[in-house]
Length: 551
Image 1 (cartoon, helix red, strand yellow):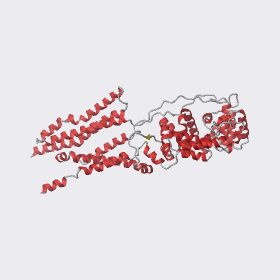
Image 2 (cartoon, one colour):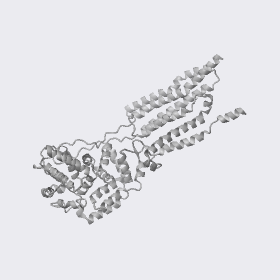
Image 3 (tube, one colour):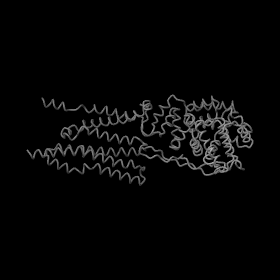
Image 4 (cartoon, helix red, strand yellow):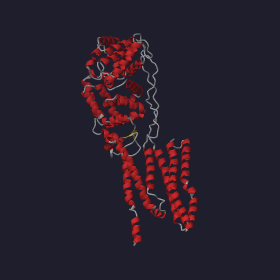
């Protein structure tokens, strides 16, 4: 009776009690939408829930009598697939029919009075770039007369730059052919006079203008004039002034001018995002960092609402798409506590793997553990779970190991020109840094092979342990199986070599991560077999032989 009681006491809980919670924790880890260096689309949807839509933003602009920015918001809404885009289009057309006089300028501004002198687009109801109104001699003379009476030192300093002749990209403003530079200088001074430049942008422009006047060298100020020329040829008055209100630096002006030249198809999306977030700097930095994929991700965020755009440009990370299920589970908690959510995700995976391994031990290897006491230490599953969690962490973060691609919207040097901008060549699109399905499939196959090798080795150890042979013979049998116990390493090397050969032959996508994962899994498998199982069992046999010899 005592023996039966001891067996019952040593018998562990049913393996199903380990399996159920383990699967639950793994499911929790898989569904929790949080990543280290990327943003899950579930978080974007949650962040944009019940926030202002692009179409709603466009209607607000129309209510403020700003049809110019509203027109770009309408285009962005259509590109983003906003359900309210059609209704906004109807409202916009009605506004344009009722107020045709506002459309060339993009709205109305009390500061427009000096610009109205000599304008040549009064009969047009279409939006007109602001430089169209300022390129005529009459318009420039009227504006110069108006600005000459300004008492703002910054305005007067800007006007004095028209006298500089040390230009590299423009014909000097006071020479024949210098009308473009003259118009840009007057436009910049007028934006300053009417307080359409942000405070930080004003400080930078003033510093450059004062330096140019004192040294007689146009220098970096000419780059800024070139950027204003680019934007002034594409935006009407209200569009340009609204953008510069949210622009905090000369660098951002240059980035927006560059984006306007190199990515005109994304211009409505970029412009609308800048106004919605009230931070052109963050939007430009995101686009310059991630290039064309970043523009597409920004468009995706716009489709979810302003909250999604705010989240994207504030985090400055790419969007994870196609790397797994995109459930809303835990999205609200993740948005509020991203660090805790990340910790919970990998803690749940660690716990789930541990419970799952203990379940397998109870289901398939309980008899082996009973035979080989000490060969299956309790920390074995924990160590294996920690290793697998690290591997899961590396492979579940699609942007962790991959180097950032060279951004195709990277700012480039502009070739010196005279008064006009040539359209640059279309940039070569880069491949977004996401993990392909073929890579994930290869990694899973290599992992499954090594798991199979691991179980084969365990079965071989249990087979030797169950034989009715002396300990000396069992020890020799274990030594005879050394090649089997090293099999995981051989298979891992073979898998890596095979993958590299197939990549060289272009039969599969080139990816070193997928190839070398086979070697990594082989090393882990052999280490676990030899350290966790073979070495303790051999030690047990050696002690048994020694005890038999002394007896």
